Image 1 (cartoon, one colour):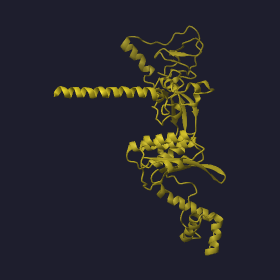
Image 2 (spheres, helix red, strand yellow):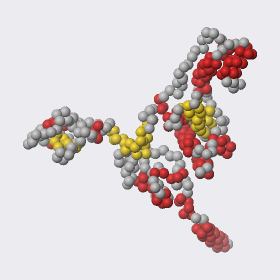
Image 3 (tube, one colour):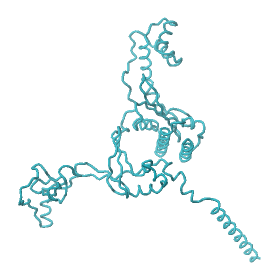
Image 4 (cartoon, helix red, strand yellow):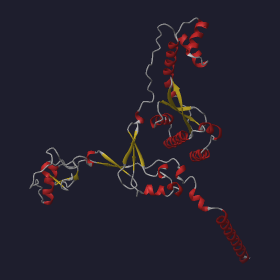
Length: 399
């Protein structure tokens, strides 16, 4: 009886083994496994949002002074450092000193003739009197290869540093992902982010006051009219959408109130200034998914940009900014306003990543409004990876 059970089990194992062999043969023959290595998620054309590593910071500081180094060497090594006895007249300026230890001219000599490099006899430091590494407070270095970053571009709110080392592991790893056809084109490498890039912000956006009121704020002390007239102006101007002059004409015809259109504009501005803190600090419900969009409006013929971030589920405005440019500054301030009140730090990071991806895609996609696509197609119960995959597919289909 026992032997029959063992034989039966062995027969089942052999059948399963043959079935596995058949499935492997089918997969290898009909499913192109090599295509998975070149999926869009691995291609530099459709890179996922990621945060690069911070650069290494090398701080240049003077640890020893020459007046302390000379007795130190004499005490520990029995070597007394004396001033240089020169055989020829020295052309080094009298105010020149070592940038590392501060040794004066008697301890300095030219290291390579008359080319320009000087050397210090006390600390053995080589430097150039015109430009040396000690003139900088710090140096940013690539975290992958250790080479110094080069400042390539200077924008309004940040300085762009780039690693230009052609043998950097980060650059070589990204270069392997690029299609060879793109490399044969003119400036094919410049289409993708291959080198390590770091943005050094010159403004601390997280210390800026988000509740700063605009200029021209007026008080609610009425000299000619009262609060009832102001409420009528707001009702006709804001609720009914009348123009300033039509509002002034309506107040004169209906209520026999003579008021100029400029005074109505001042009332509207005063009411907006009073309501702004309540709107900005209202505790809106915040979920894991935010949607963002930026568009332009014209104010007195001047193009102005409006940044909006809202909850994908409740569609409540969580953050906004009005700016005269499409720089990174208003974008960060809008993201900061939208993330206020989030308790979980991981939830805050995911939300900020989500908003950044949306804004980048919205700036790139000019043919179709991605906000309308999100409202119509995006499910309301998606986690961050699923939402980012949906955005990537949407951007790929709109190309």
